[in-house]
Length: 178
Image (cartoon, rainbow, N blue to C red; front, side):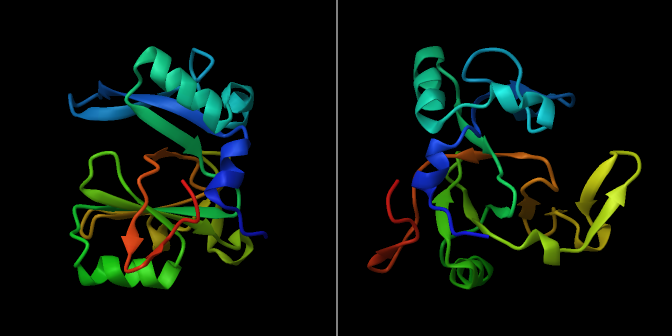
């Protein structure tokens, strides 16, 4: 497992664009689509619809998409922390513990932390219904009680939004370059 920077990830074909759209319950949701046009997703069948960062950024600009996103790479995690002030003790603990790339979410009211992990050490079980490995239910990936969600590349099969607005802590930044 190697440490990859955001600049490394920008060169990989794992990027997409998304738009806010009404969901089943009328609540706005983020719907991904390919930078090349058409549907996309994080399943293997969509791998040819993913683009580099530059391609996705150009598509976002030309079609007026709401934002950029990416398929979370294998052996990487994505923490999504909602509705926490920078002074919040839990947020500060997560930022210092993970010491990884951190950015503001699209709403500006949340934080994203992206980093590497050893998925071989995670509690993974095979889900017969989904026909794939998933994170064990004991380690539920979305906790509405504390506003923290965790997604693991190739296990939770989700896309992550990306703003490129890094979080600065003191005199250092969690990202070497946007």
